[in-house]
Image (cartoon, rainbow over all chains, first blue to last red):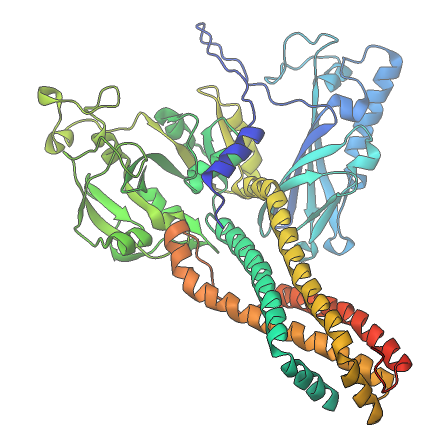
Length: 194
Length: 420
């Protein structure tokens, strides 16, 4: 039964996502569109191509850290440092089948919260100029894995939820060897099967 | 074995009520199987509509909405995409191919879509199958049209047929493009997707139709541009509805997606078709579950009907049981006899249900195809269907054990003399 346009229409009315307002300035300088920022919810993009696995995590800092202001106090700075160390040790965040023989190649982290660490502020294009204490900040992490036995790579377990209890859901976009898949990952449903 | 014969003979003795029971079970089985069949076929037909496309780009709305109007031609676009955005992404270094899609006109209820040669080269459906022609070739002339298989079949069009496109997408349109008729230059082979119900013309042809229109109405008199004069004009489209992108390598999918979502020229969004499709299923999953549950209850109703029929017959069959006992049947034989009766009723019902299902499919297949564009393959029941049927049989045996137990108790207690 092909769902009638009416049913589809009413469903769409429920789920249609409000698009962020976007305007052109007359000075020829353009504003970036704001992406959604919901505490407890991050997004996880994953591509498997041959033996390469690229994983991209974008999450409100609050889910991983518990705060989103620039770290000023010693305690906060220590927390940020600990988080960076935790993300850099990505092998514990993503569990691959042992038979696939996957190893971590590279981790890239970017967030306004990490900028202050090395003393000089980068001008990132996706940042606001005013990082007030109220502002929302995202943390982006790129992980690169390499698997020698790609045929054995039939699933990936996302162990992020136990490491970061502040993360409730991850919106998944995955491109596996057999095509695209989407959905939501939670602490109980944390397997991506190909 | 002799017990089964006995059970069937005993049923034959009460053939009318037995037949009614079988029909009730049969109808309920048909309903359950038909619901499941349509559900799975609809899913696979949806899933096989698009393949090989890495990203769908359109105006910002919801991902499911974009998928529905661009690929399935359901619903309407919220906004258009500027032609310069298309050119920007088509020439992007990471993009292998880009297919422009422009929707909006119709012909006798079928949608008309403007696109370009890239569509015939790169559009894939099912398991990476390309579009093939049963006759003719892709559009070459400004007023050429390529029609899908359903249109050729239903309207009886062939190569060279002239068709007048209508403005808007209603089956009855008050304004048409009568001054610029199109000619069928190609007929596509059946795909089992919305492509079969689409008329494809070139983007320039789409533009030529509307070149002299003002405020959505055709120009009158001197302002009108004839079909031949339109060829001289610059027919670059100003806007299209959506873009399908194929990338050089899958690893860059998310980078390109982000670039589209943050494109400065206009608010656009890019979705992964597979992800959007899954989102659609999770929405429709609720309705599917509800349908399934309703059908299961209908089957249960049929089985309860059987239980009632057997139970109410027990009292009338005390004499039968007593005679069986007198010729040496043990109470457990009586128990088995009644179980076999329930099982044979259920099996007859299941067979009748399967028969009705395939009869219905055989009759309904062309109707569903022409009405809804959904091709339902007639395949033998798969593992899942057999599991369902097995569960029904099991449920019937469980239910049959109730009267069987009662008869067992009675045959222990009753003698040959019937107490009235």
